Length: 312
Image: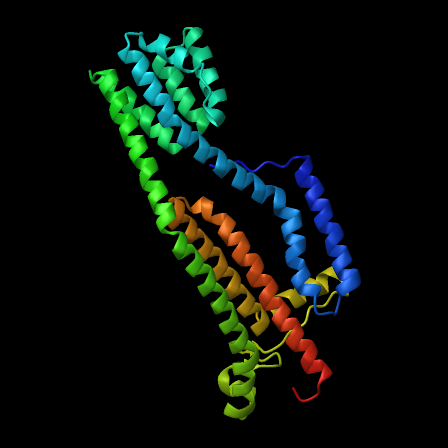
C-alpha cells in the first residue's frame, strides 16, 4: 500500500500550483490557453504525490527482485550445515540493494534473541510486499508442519524466480499492446473532438428545426443539455454555480468522458503489463493530462473562432 505523506515539498508544490493558478487567471482569462493551462497547474500542485507513488512502486519492484537472491543464499547457507538463525545473520551481511536495510534489521532482531518466526513475520510487514509476505508465510507453515527447511527454501526460491520470469515475459509481450492503447486513446480523443465540434453543430443546423428536437439546448430548459456554457469568475459563489452548469454542458460532458476513459485505460494497462493496478497510475496521469489539454484546447480554439467569425 502506497503511503501518501504531506511534507515540505508537497506544501511548496501546492503553493506553486496556487501561484500558477493566479497567473493563469491574470494572464489567460478569457483566452484560448486559460482552461488548458489548468492541467499544468494541477500537475505542478500534485506532482510530489505522483512521484511518491511511482517511487514506492519502483522500490517494491526492486525489493521483490532482490528477495529470491536472499532466499537462495539462505538455502545454500543452511545446506552447508549452519543453524537457521546463524545462517540468516550471515546471509544478511551481503548487499541486496533496496532490501538491505530490512535484512539488517532482521539480523539485528535475531541477534537480540527474537525468535526466527517472529523476526521473519516482522520483516514481511516492514517490506509491505505481498510476494515476500506469502513466501515467508509458506516457509513458516511448512516448517511448523514438520517439513525440511532446506527443501522449503529451495521450492520457494524456484517459485519466486518463476514468478519473476513470468512477469518479465508478460511485460515484454504487452509492450506492443501499450503502444496500441495510446494510439487508440488519441484516436478516441480526435473522434470526440469531431463529434462535439463538427457533427453535433451540423446536426443542429441541418438535421433539426430547433435544438430541443435532439435534446440539446442553448438555454436553461429542464432535461436538456446546454450546447455551450461559460465560467463566471466574478466571485467564488458565482464560479461554483457556473461550474455546475459547465459540467452539464457538452464541453463538460465530453471532457469528463475523456478523463474517465484516460483514467481507466491507464489502470488497465498497468494491470495487464505488471499485474498491479497502482502501476497504471503513471499511464492514467499521462492520458488524463493529454485528454484535458487536447479537449479543452480544441474547445477554446473553436469557441474563439466562432466568436471571431459571425455565423459559425
